Image (tube, rainbow, N blue to C red; front, side, top):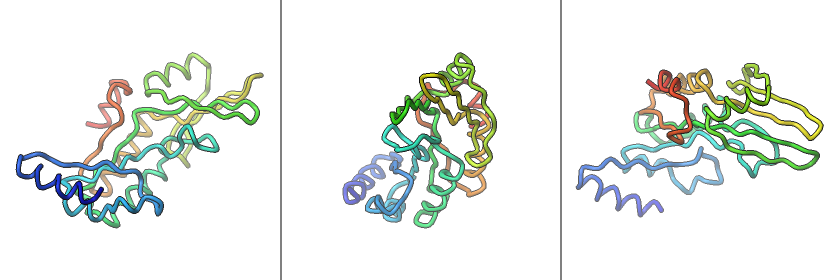
Length: 186
């Protein structure tokens, strides 16, 4: 994997192309991606600062809490100079449903999730620990939970990016965001 990117970097430079490499938030189990080595030959090392909790998670939770984002940035900067790091932020969230022991989630773009919350009458309140609005609704069929990405939560993540002097921000995935998000990203 690393050798492939070494060789690709030579071809990219020869052709005036910028090479960035996307990575998961660094943990011991994925350190074979060797961020330090990537930082030596790639123009940018991108950290996908999301998927803290996914469909396969054993418990519901945030897609990208502020603590998870900070951890990803801090761990990456141990191996890559900050100006070569780009942190990816999610333009999506997950709606979690639990009925007895059964847990499921659906990923939704921010705009769709905001409409869903309004439609379902889920009340959101700011959660300092995650740096996101959180909502929970109990019905006779189970519990619905959401940790909402939106302008304020993304602004907190972008503040971390600025404070750490990173090379930039990326978003996953275009089209999932409402227009007002771009004010924060600007």
